[in-house]
Image (cartoon, rainbow, N blue to C red):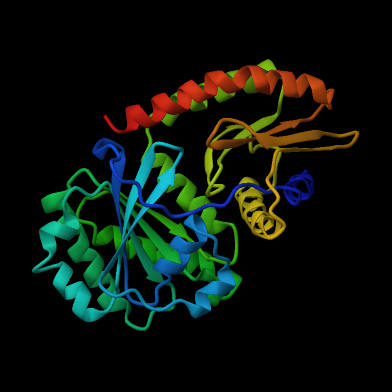
Length: 333
């Protein structure tokens, strides 16, 4: 049941997620990601929460980004996300579309456009989004586009679906035929991890092979669900299993959120995570460090001995390590 997953996740921790610079990295493994939107939309805070040691409450102390802030984020070992966090003040935005147009919009793998759900100037936001799409079509026509309707916690729950659909409809109208994917997000719940998990997976099409092997492993050990988390960010890399019997399709994003908070707490004690197990007469859950860059969560409806699962995970580990390396190489091709 859903409460079992929440109980399971509360014991988890891991190594620090961090933003790093890496000299001499392969250009092919370096994906340019534009993070754009009006000033105050929440771009920098979400980046800091996902990729660095920040909690949502830290957002109140963050200063507005000036011009473009560059950071190299290590993901799954040899993949680097070259994040361009673009300040959203009028002066900077107008400059992006004129003098810096080719520099900003050239060689882009992904555009993440963030719109505050209660933004003061929605007309301006939509106009800038339209300009971004035109620039991408000119300089990076193959770029993937994601729109985050952000700070959904600022409106009442019963308004959220209708408001999200309304803004999504307008964004798609302004996309000039470019395919866009929209998410409703907030730094205060699991939606932020759900959105960024899907974005990062899109950057790595080579993960399809990992997904297939995850399915084979799940059936081999008679598990009901298996999930891989990226070790630094706790984003969901791949998962296998059915949502049919579960009322909460975002339960693993909730696991990610709780794991990240627990990691921050345990880091104060200089504690590193190795593995944990939760079981009762109805199920058992194993969470442990897996490959160099991942954690694995295995859920079994019929509890099995701990030694059985450790042995199978140890045997599967080397296979998934090689698949992980191939996924990074394949995604950079």
